[in-house]
Amino acid sequence: MASAAKSSSASMAPLLRIPPFPGAKLRHFRPHPARAAETSIAEVLQALCRERVGGSYWSAPPSKAPRGIVARSRAVLPLARELAGEDGNVILWPATGDDGGDLTGSHDPWSVLEIATGLICTGDDEVLPIARLLDVPVYLQPGPDEVSVEQAVTGLGSLADPFTGEPMSMLQAIELCGFWRRLIESNRDLIGALGFAFWKQESVAPLLWNGAGPLPFWRSVPTAVPAGAVAIWRSKAKPEDIDSLESRGTMLVEVEDGFLRSAGLGADCVPPLSVTVDRLGPYFDHAQASELEGLLQNCQFGADMLDRARRLRKTIVAAGLGKYERGGTAVPRLGGDRRHILIPGQVEDDRSVLTGGLGLSNLALLERVRRHNPDAFLLYKPHPDVEAGHRRGAIPQARCEALCDQMVADLPIASLLDMVDEVHVNTSLAGFEALLRGKPVTTHGVPFYAGWGLTTDLGPVPDRRSARPSLDELVAATLLSYPRYLDPVTGLPCPAEVVVDRLCNAQPAAGLLVRARRLQGSLSRQWRSWRS
Image 1 (spheres, rainbow, N blue to C red):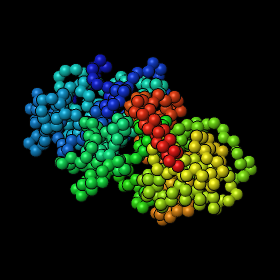
Image 2: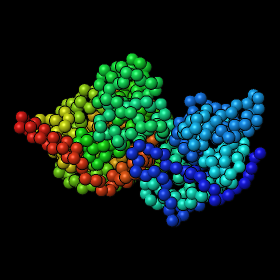
Image 3: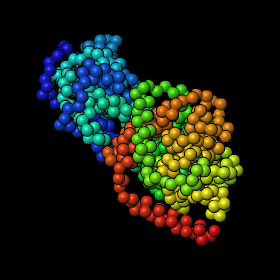
Image 4: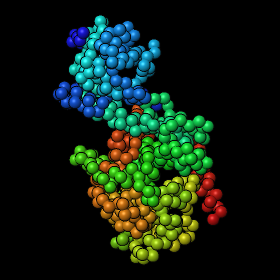
C-alpha cells in the first residue's frame, strides 16, 4: 500500500513557520531574493530532527500519548484497522481538526508521530515530511502526489532573517525555530500570571506563551485554579493571593526585569524588552539558589557560546549600553590624579536590596566607602527611579555633599564606568556593568555576580558559589542563557543580540502613559525638594 509518488507541484503549508506568538507583528518567514550560504540537505534533515521543528511544532503534545496507526480522515479508518490488526490501535487525527477524533485540534506533530506505528494521509499532508524524518511507515491515500522532505525543504527557497532582513541559511532558520520551541516548552505548564502591571502585559505575554491560547493575567487568584504553575511579579502581587497559591501547592515562577531592560525606566511605565523567569527563586536572593546561580556554578558553555558572549560584551561596552540608557560621552576626571570611585545608589525598598542588600541604605553605603577610602574622589550617582521621584532612596543633599566629591545624577552610567578606577556597590547591576568593562568591583551586599572570584566581596557570599567562571562565562549565563528577550519591532522572542542592536538605534517617542508618569515624577521631586 505504500507509495513513493512525488510531485514538486503539490500544495501544502510551509514546513518551517513562525509560531503565532501573541501580539507578533510578523507571522511568516519572508522570502529573500539572495541566497544564503549553501547547506547540505543531509545537515538540514539532521537539524530538523535535532530541533524537532516543522509543522505546528509549537502546539502541545497530546495529554495521552497515542501509540498506533494514525489516520488523518474517517474515510481510511477501515484500512487503518486492517493494518493495525486485532491487537493494534487506531488513532483518528483529522487533518482539518474540525470533524472530531481521538485527537482533535492542533497537536505537536513530532510528539504524535514519534510513537506512531504508521500514518495514513494524503501526499500533501503537512505532517507527512515529519513522518518520513521519523521513519514512520506511511500509507498514501489516493490524491495529490507526495511532497518529499527534500522538496518540502528546498521549496521554502531563500528566507529572510525576521530580525535583520538579511538572507539566512536553512540551518539558521531551523535553529531559530528550535530556539522558539524550547522557549514555548518551558512555558507548557503555565496556567496564569499574577501581579503584572497592565502596561507590561503586552511585552511579557509572548515570552510566557505556552503554545495554546493567550496566558490569562489575573488581578487576583480565581476561585478555581487548575493544576499547573503561575508566573508572578511578586512585588506587585497581593500577599494574600501569594498565600492562597502557596497553600494550594501551586508552583510559583518568579518573573523580574532583565539586565538589558529598555531605553527608559520601568517606574516611568516603559515596557521591558527582557525579563528573567526562574522556577527556583529570584536571582537576587542569595538566601536560596536560583537558576542563574546554577548556570554559573555548572558553567557548561561551548566555544560558540563563549564567542557569542565575548562579542556581545564588546558590543555593549562600545555602544555604552546600560540597563535603562545609552551613554558614550567622555566624562572628565574632576579629581585629577586621585583614585576615582563610583558609588551607584539604589531603590531602597526594591526586593533586590531588601534580600541581598543586608539592610544597607544608600547613605550607609556612601558613609562606609568614604570611611575606608578617605583620600579617594567619590562620585555618587542616585538611582534613576529615585532621581525621577518615583521610589525611595534619596540622600539629603547636604549629607551627600559632605560625603562625596561629586553628585553625577545626570551622567550616563556607562560614561562614568569608563572613567572611574573602581566601583563600590550594594547589589546594583552597575557592578556587573563595570565588570563588563574590566573595572575592579567591590560588593558590600550579595548581588548575583558576587562570590565567583571576579569581585572583592564584603558581604556573606553563600558557600555554594564555589565555581570560578571567567568573565565571558558570566556574560554567557547572565545575558545569553538566563533572560528572555522581545524584539520591539517584530514582537517576536529573540536572541540577546537583537535587543542590543535595537537599543543601539533610535527608540520610538514616549507614549501618553510614559509622559504622564514622567510628569508625576517631576512633581514628586519638586515636592520633595520643597519639603527639605
